[in-house]
Length: 416
Image (cartoon, rainbow, N blue to C red):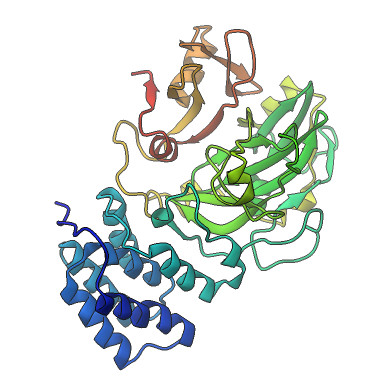
């Protein structure tokens, strides 16, 4: 049961306590009697909105005793019982699920906390059409390297600009059952192996004469492709990078030239100069398939080279994420298991729809038709994509159910 929420501004005393406990402590790198006293004032206030700032600090705390102390304060403010484990995650899940409002001045406080740990975020935390309550740290630093300098090392998840490619025939390092993300643009085909995208998570490429920004969120199981050309006059090609931040377990990407933040799931600029221009990038379909099936269907395909894989090949769903989302997401739509694979698309009327991949593949393999409003599903290279009634690309992609359903809360589900 959500707690009662006070309205209006917070008192000067509470505002000062917030500064001492959550901002001064990270700037000075200390936690002492002043912070303990301030935390008591915050506890006495009983204002659940302050729990958002408690949560933000908790994300960066490594001291077990301090983590428990902050957890107890947040739990008391929210009126929930004492949390025994995963303190930050449990607190934040409650905040999201109950949609607790942020306190006045929240962005300034959050920004001060976050940039104390990663100074490169100073341009990221800006006003815009983004719910900063839901933004958390993904455990890595920002990739702020300029375009076409991705061969330089970084203490970040390293994007790849203009990656080297080879023919399918020369890609002997790939096994037929390796997962790839296939993209087709203007009759040209390219495969982006998952074992590369797991460690790069962002590629800026050119295919079929078009510029693309291709984010892959390992947490959401979603590879997407956005056209980064053909934009309104005066807008240069956005160069997409990983910020190191998450929003409800989905990576937060940004343009390294303008520091405009994008909603990764929708391709919409939500802060910065590109937000002021109302920029929304159009998607190209991404087909998740096995390499053997993809190259058989498209023998002319090119594929990223092995050197880009950095020697790692993860299957997070069977390891790190096997017990569900590892970052807070709030409530999850119960109609499917959280890690069920779906093919997501949006109809001409604006209705988002998720097609359960396993059942779609079974139906299409038997020759059955799958149609939802103007959307038609097709098998492509061992994967599935959505096209319009005229065969046009609808920018579909595969994702985990929890991710698609939380960013499209009104989604339809096939089969119902």
